[in-house]
Amino acid sequence: MDYKDLANIIFPEAKPIEYYENKYEKRNLKEGAIVTRFAPSPTGFVHIGGLYQSLIAKTLAKQTEGVFFLRIEDTDQKREVENGVVDIVNSLKNFNIEPDEGMIGENEEKGNYGPYKQSLRKEIYQAYAKDLIEKKLAYPCFETAEELDEMRKKQESAKVRPGYYGVWATWREKPLDEVIEKIKNGDPYIIRIKSMGREDRKIKHHDLIKGNVDFPENDQDIVIIKSDGLPTYHFAHAIDDHLMRTTLVIRGDEWLSSVPLHLQLFQTLGFKAPKYAHIAPIMKEENGAKRKLSKRKDPEAAVEFYHKEGIPDDAVKEYLLNIANSNFEQWRKQNKDAKIEEFTLQLNKMGVSGALFDMTKLLDISKTVISKYNKEEVYNEAIKWAEEYDKNLEQLLSKNKEYTLKVLGIERGNVKPRKDISKWSNLEENIEYMYDEIYLNKEHNYEYQNIKDKEEIKKIISLYLEKYFDINDDKQVWFDKIKDLSEELGYAREVKEYKQEPEKYKGHVGDVSTVIRISLTSRANTPDMYEIMQVLGKESVIKRLQKIIK
Image (tube, rainbow, N blue to C red):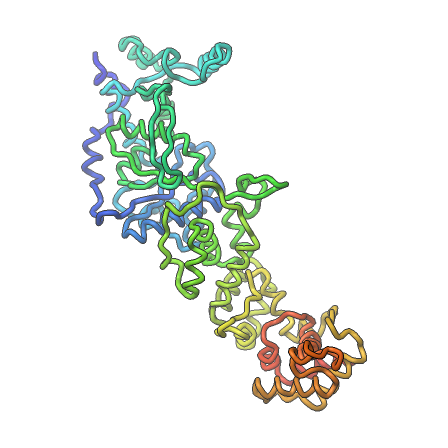
């Protein structure tokens, strides 16, 4: 008997690897086109870091006319969660990062390089494992868990590296008849790859983000097929990336230390290795120290958080590109109205250390993104969010759609549009003062600013209603009347006049207009007051101002 016989005993049904090499042909793409993927495990919610990787992968594939695919790495089925695949698919879909190929549902896929779920590719992995056994590059290993534990203790006592390598790889060179006898007896076993590496030798590697790095060679005889017949992650990903014709692997830098092993696997299997780009994690500052965003501690680690908060997908993606490339911010300043798809992402402009997550920055970006929406887009996006997360807001928006559109249209489409809305979850608090049924039935804390005297406030409002208020005035006439009102009551018509001779005036026109603004809305900062009054209408303005007088 020889190793071909051993391989046939272990994998009698496995096809020759030539079958798969012919089935999954090289892709017919233009030179320089990138083929990359997102390859998560369905073991929990999608992390913001996963979305970050997907966005970068999708962007690079698209701008080179390549392919971005979604592969599900579900060989560790003990950790798989219910609806894990659907959650991954939907998370990408919600952010409009849909794959060109791969899984599009729990059991649905598109593309010619599938199955795109590793648990359905068992026969492929076994074919390549069989080929390695035939070539004496892999072997069955019969150590029990207890025996491996005993070996580890001996290694610790001897103060040597733990693992299955060199003299510790006891099944590596066992006689063939002994191996075959144990298989025929039904003894459980795994398949290990025979490493030709030596720890005292170095490999040099160029990472597209980290630059030139070197590592000791891998000398461990790692497991490639588990006792249940499924592959380990390391073995499966090498075969899949080869057959799916991946040219660039984009992943978190926690995988950087696996590069020697993965390059060795590609070499042993006779494959050309893809290029690697290891992305630094998104960090969080805590007690003066940096740490990775944690699934356990940080709600913002889950992509679902952004939907629950009502932060638009465009804003999240823009923020991620902002931390991905140092030149994005400058590009945005020069291209204020461009779509993010027009930005050229470059891996060599990605930071090698993790960017700090900044919620304030994200919400600032979100304000700018929302400020560019027209009133119909704001309404549609807000009500879509409210239907799922906030029934009160849904009712408010839908009760009088035409009026709400007018409210949302205030100061929209201007050179400097309103930027008071950062997420749909704070929309109601930003517009509720525009609805009489809420505003007039609510107690307000009118925090007047420079003018605090109640009698003076009453005098300003009374004179305004009596002499200067006309809902039909255009904006210039309206503002001129506010100046006239100010002058009549002893305030400067212009701010600069007041600054030049403050002793001559009680204050300036801005102080007077602020009294009217706060009296109408209970807040000092609002969008354009003239537009607010036009939307409120004559009756509402009078009611509100008379309430203050009383």
